[in-house]
Length: 310
Image (cartoon, rainbow, N blue to C red):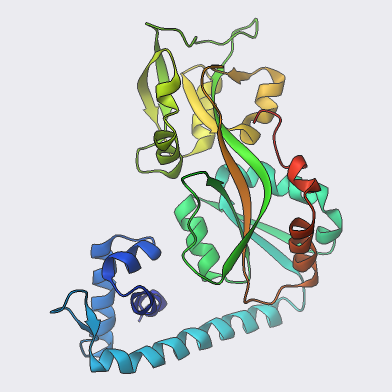
């Protein structure tokens, strides 16, 4: 039996439909349905009546629901208690975040909040957006750092999660430079410019599409490279292979040194809030509380976590 099956079943009870529950669990509906079926096979009886729309629980399903809640709580408690005992009261602050944010946001947080971090072990777990959110949900005592754009906010599917804004970021188009520091490609009409793009199903690609960023240019873009990893897109841009939309803070050093430059003044930056997330129902260490309360009570750090290019 996989714990994810129990979590799926609880999500189905919360949202009342396979489609909504699958979305909340960040998986496809067919995959979600297969996992519910595997749970039923493990229990040995049908838990969901699929002859109604929306689907409802059978009598056995309602009976199992209480056991599922108890089981999830017991497993979470056992895991947290074991970790606390094993760490011998050592304070560990874990941040789940995207690869690009892991490189500079946490560093700035530590530099501006040294007191909160001086006695703690900081562990950064970088991944793609989906896996970062899922890891945060699975490890309820940790922090999540993410970008929330206007009209494309970061959705964390749990009502117990709260957030605070710790800074501001933006996506901007950047391009490599010539020896004289000028841009390798120009945003001019009738020009065809190579584009280093995110795959269409990624979060950044959807944000850029919603804001019409590519359409704001005067040139015509030709996609020559696709990659979901911002590191790869930055490397390709520095090497002169085309234009890439990247978080300004992620390329701040390259912009200041002149290795990269902003591609066009015609294209507006896509602004976002840098958000810090935690479970409001979980007890925090003194160090975590100090950090959290700092961001809740002052706006001073928001300026230091905001790049000058936004």
